[in-house]
Amino acid sequence: HILIIGSANADHVMKFEYLPAAGQTLMSHEYRLEQGGKGANQAVACARLAKSGSFIDFICHLGQDSVGNDMRQSWIKDGISTEGISQVAGLSTGTAMIFIGDNGQNTIGVAAGANASLSPHDLDNHIELFARAQYLLIQLETPTATAVKALQMAKKQGVITVLNPAPATALGNSCLKWVDIITPNETEAEALSGIEINGTEDAQMAAQLLHQQGVGIVVITLGSRGAYVSSTDFTGLVPAINVQAIDTVAAGDTFNGALVVGLSEGMSIAAAVGFANAASAITVTRQGAQRAIPYRHEILY
Ligand code: ADP
Image (tube, rainbow, N blue to C red):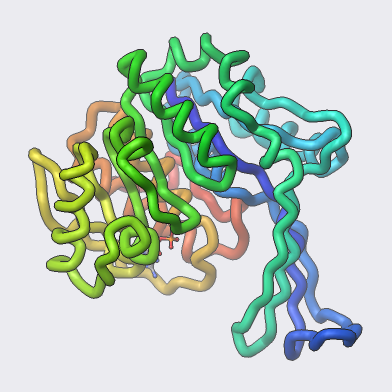
């Protein structure tokens, strides 16, 4: 069993020749509604990448709205168990409005909606999901106090805890002491350690600081270069797969889901990171968030 806790967002993506200025109304030349949110993306990655018969639980808050209903339905198709999914009356499903200019610039507004209502107290309704979990995978797009409590509950029950510390934020020992495995990207590693990550030497220095806070395994993702691992079993770079990237949305989320699936199947850390590189390399060759995430049979690893 893998337990994922986190956010779900409906991403409204509009593309323009140039970004509209304040006070301006502009027609977009492309519009898409994407199912996204870091928690949901990672849950979908786990469900699509796990071997059939695996159990994927996802604790999240959606609104009682059509977007929330649609997400729930598509997650059921992917094989995610519905026990942890709540639709909260009076709140809307998390929403992001993403404006992209043809020059690549963007402006993004986010309404956390129901995501913000996932409180530490809500976790007490899901004790049985913690009890059956082997791994917990969590991010920071839902309230940090909830993440800290989830990590603590899991760790106390012997569940292996994996924190994807995204979006970037500084975290103290009161959170990190419950984390077995942490998976920042370069920006997030810098926010955690104060060290700017330009290469593997910087990555090792940042990892060292995180080890000192009690984190056993540090995996820093380095985009097209792959991921740097620091652990007692293996330390070094696991190179990415060389592909033509067209859209890197959900790359990190696919990586995290795949990493945990690999570890839960008994792969070594180096092998699980190789599997995660392979899965996320496929994601970056496709448009979109959840719809870009590959299925297990697509991965030759
Ligand atoms: P995030 O998406 O969270 O910023 P990264 O950019 O570090 O995280 O990407 C996560 C993982 O996705 C990388 O470790 C790598 O395995 C894969 N990846 C990202 N970009 C590419 C790329 N251009 N080519 C191949 N793999 C990629």
